[in-house]
Picture 1 (spheres, one colour):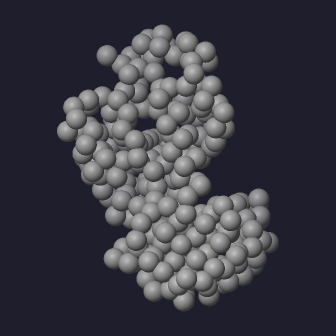
Picture 2 (cartoon, rainbow, N blue to C red):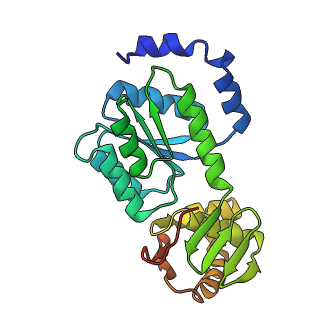
Picture 3 (cartoon, rainbow, N blue to C red):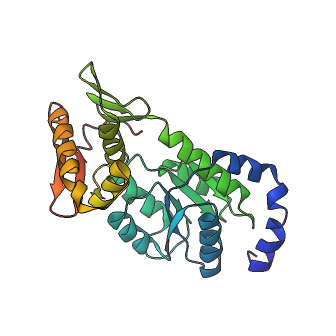
Length: 257
């Protein structure tokens, strides 16, 4: 049984464990959505992820997780399988219908092969069996985020973006974006068909949410829109006073980043 006492006992050796040393070497942060119906497990895992430097949003059931996903921008989603309202597989399917690019991790006590296979069939990058401590969860979360941040974003059959070099590939042509344009497009690419809030884009582009920078954001978005409008199936739209949407036709998009 996964109790607080078991958790404490199994994590006392955490700092001497090879997993801990690996995790610390990755040194990452991000915003994580974690859905778990058991209160104690939810709180313990949430606290540990916060200690590792993540901003964590907790959900007690699948419906709450889906609502949170629609209202926020996350770097990864961790799901228990057996949660109320919408189970973990159903939440994963909903998320995949909107965003193929966000990493999904199942963290469950269900160990049968059929459950694990179904997790991967529903888009999981990793399926982790709960064991009372979280070495594996922390390490694999960091690894998934590291891998996800270094790959190409394939937006449509005609369009891809390299987040490392800021190169935009359109219809066989290559366009190198400015550092600022690359930062903004990278965030939009990793959150397709979702509202990316204006304050987040300002923080990433100008390290400030001051309204004085909004005109610069508008100019940057305008430049990106002109580039993207050459390709079919993609559209950069604004949501008045809230932020921007990178809308991608799911029938045209080829694969995730």
